[in-house]
Image (tube, rainbow, N blue to C red; front, top):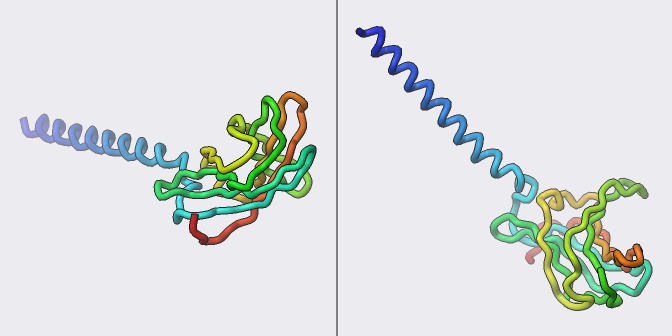
Length: 154
């Protein structure tokens, strides 16, 4: 009888431990998507647009909000040529070689302030830039290379 009681207790402890480990694993894996985005709120990086195919001006910033989410902010002075099918892309370069090219969203407006949600990987700004691309003619209108902004306010 004592053996059966000890065995039940041991199985209950093992079961509770397994359930706790499973719950901890869920919590940790849920947070891993934004692990790179963790840090103090504020401007992570910024860059000035330069023209490629058409005149593009203004600035772009990668900003971390209070919840840790990253946002691409185009300045109110942002301007580019209007066209159908303009998109915002993130690019990453190592030297002169492009290693990533990711569409973020359709450009909301050819001018003025606007924001776009960024993936957590954008917290690593080494070699990161933003590009405004015309899908119809397959040309980059303009781009901005990001430089780390340190600990400045949004």
